[in-house]
Each structure stands twice: as C-alpha cells, then as structure tokens.
Length: 437
Ligand SMILES: NC(=O)C1=CN([C@@H]2O[C@H](COP(=O)(O)OP(=O)(O)OC[C@H]3O[C@@H](n4cnc5c(N)ncnc54)[C@H](OP(=O)(O)O)[C@@H]3O)[C@@H](O)[C@H]2O)C=CC1
Ligand SMILES: N[C@@H](CC=O)C(=O)O
Image (tube, rainbow, N blue to C red):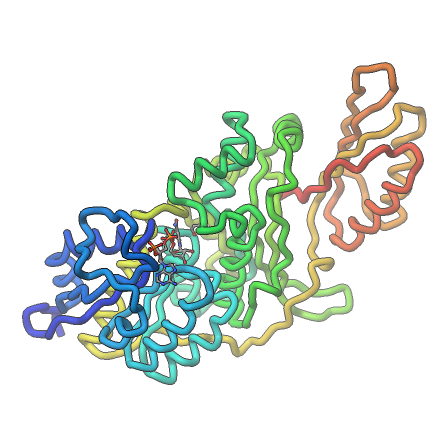
C-alpha cells in the first residue's frame, strides 16, 4: 500500500520538552510539515509542547499557544508522544502514561532507558505501541537501528567507540587548544552538547547509559547503567593530555561493550567507559569536537564503523524525526517496530576481567635499579612490559618519570600491580594508569 497523507486522518503529536532538542524538533514539524506528512503517510498535528516554565523566552518558531506545563493531560490526547525532557521523573511516568493511553513514544532519554528500559519496553509491548529511541545513542548517527535490526541475524562480538559529544569536545579542546577542563565544559554547554547537569557527561554517566543501551541490543541481554564500569574525565590533567601526545596517543573517553570469557570459562559481557589512550594513527584519534564514532565487530559482518555528529539540537532532532516517521508509518499501515530481545541473558562480568594494554606513569627516584624493581612487581602479577620510557626531571632532587606500557593484561592484575608498585620506597607517585587501545 502506498503512503498518502490525504487519506489518513492527521495524527496528534505531543512534544515533551522544548529545550535544545525539542526546539529543533518543533521547528522541523512546523517548517517541513508537508514533506514529513508525505513520508509518514499522515499529517503530524502538533497538539502541544510541554515545558517546565511558561516564562522562558522561546525560539519564535514555537507557537506559545501550544505551550503547557500540564504534560500529563497533554500525553492523554496524543497519538505519538516525543519525550525530550530528560531525567528520570516525570519522564518515566509520562512515557508509561502515554503507552497506557495507546500512544507510540519516541524518546532521546538514555538515562531513563538505561535505568528503566525493561519496564518501558514491556509496557509498550503490552499496549501494542512502538517505543523508539535512535536519538538516545550518539545523536544523529544511526546506530540503534543497525544494532537492533540490521545485525539481528549476526553475532555481535564488540561495540566500541566515542559516544559522548561533550567529553570528546572537552578532550579535543584540551588537546588542540590547551583549554582547561572547566572552560571547555562551559563551551560545550553553550553549544547545546551537554546534559542539563554536565556532571552526567564529565563523570561518564551519559556514555555509560549509552553503552548499557548498546550492550543490551547487541548481546540480547539486559544491561543497566549500574552494570557499567565507569570512569569519567574529571581526574584528567593537562599533563595527562601532554603525555598522551608525547607517547603518540590521543586521550578519548571510550565506551566498550564486549563478549568475554572469564579465566574459569564463564561467558558473559563486559561493559565499561573509561579515558583511553588511542594511538594517533587510529581512526578514533581523528574524531574531533562533539563528533562520535562507533565500531561494531560482528562474527559474519566483520568490522563496521559509524561516524557523525553525536550531540546538538539539529543533529539529534534528525534522529528523533526519523523515529517519528517510522512510528507514524506503523500507525498508518499497521505493524509495529521491534520489541526487546533479551533472551540471551548473559551475566555482566566484573570489570576486573577486562583485558587491555595499559600505560602506567610513575614519578620515581632517579636511582640505579628502579626500573628493575618496578618490573619485578609487574612480573609478580604476570604483567609483562612492552615498552619503557624514562625522562629525567630537572631540579636538585634527582627524580624521573617512568612511562611503562604493558602487554595485554587483566585489569585485576593491573590494579594489584599498581598497589604493589605504589608501596615501593623508590616510587614517589603513581601519576596515572590508563588503558591503551
Ligand atoms: N542536547 C543534546 O545534544 C542531546 C540530548 N539528548 C537527550 O534529549 C533530551 C533533551 O535534551 P535537551 O534538549 O538537551 O535538554 P534541555 O535541558 O535543553 O531541555 C529540556 C526541556 O524539557 C523541559 N522540562 C524539563 N523538565 C520538565 C518537567 N518536569 N516538566 C515539563 N517540562 C520539563 C524544559 O522546560 P523549560 O524549557 O521550561 O526549562 C526544557 O524545555 C535529554 O534526554 C537528553 O539526554 C540526546 C541526544 C543529544
Ligand atoms: N550530552 C550528550 C548529548 C547527546 O547525547 C553528549 O554530549 O553526547
């Protein structure tokens, strides 16, 4: 059956939230109504836009008569609800209320999905409506659909990449412009990349939520935010950035979700977010500003790479509107999008099982035999050394910086090594321990 907006009654769309993303969604609904109707098969009638305050100055494209602070009533009169408020409550209650009333939902709310996804998927399934969330991971990049649908016939082994635009913008600004962390965060906020509370970005919660969503889809297993081993970027210093460059790397906040097997032969998944040293010639090293990039490794497909704008109003609105067209097509033609697939039910393994190369930077006394003593502690944990760099520090006090790159080792062994090395009298300070891609 061909799509023809003239033959189907208009569908009522409620937008919850009129901030960075909501405003762009409203703009496109207003300015591209005819084109969207032609693609979706029905006119999309914007019946209201829920906001927290009616006193905030809005973009002139937003008709003030459509604004309301009564989101609960609004969702009850919509066929499709687009949730762009963020946060857990009242977003969670409103999404549930929407599906109970038979509305399909499109959301960009990764925090909510990573915390309460299963309850929301079940509710949508029970109500026979769609719950779409392409914009929740990596902004404009189509990654949810490829993992959820296109790769449903393959076995995904690993998903790895940069999924937070704010931290990538911050680390890029620190690396290329010498900006301080706070200054760069302020810029990212002004550009509309950061979460309402940017702690979610810089402490890695936002990337962890996205990693949990991708891991759930990729491995057909429920993974929640709390399952993700998470380290943010707030402890990184200008010195870390400089040393990354000196050793031929770029610092990136990476999310990694992979199938793994423990030493005892237990299968499971590992999901982590951590600042990582990416070799300068790796494609991820060239991901600048607020761009995101995700690699997916699957058994049959091999390696796939997705790249694009990971944050910001217009790019995110693109993903939201793509979902909106999809769910409206289902209402017009019948049918429904995919439901949750969590049958594999793999355990989420402890982060200590993760294996990586590491770069350990130490400040040591400049004395003969120091390296041998440090190496002995690594060897005691079965951690072998790939490369060492020793740099003498200027000054009266004979000190040196030791930069040790290890071969691949379990994180658990690395932690034990670092504890042992810190206790050596010749080691003044373990300055940093970073995984190397
Ligand atoms: N910004 C981005 O680049 C991206 C954002 N996202 C996600 O999209 C969602 C929206 O983000 P963004 O547009 O940046 O957020 P903003 O903070 O810019 O906007 C949030 C909007 O929601 C409204 N709102 C918040 N709480 C309530 C409430 N209790 N009742 C009614 N309205 C409320 C606010 O109202 P008021 O204007 O009155 O304050 C505001 O209009 C979030 O889930 C975010 O994680 C996803 C991908 C990228
Ligand atoms: N704050 C988020 C917005 C998009 O998801 C980010 O910086 O990536």
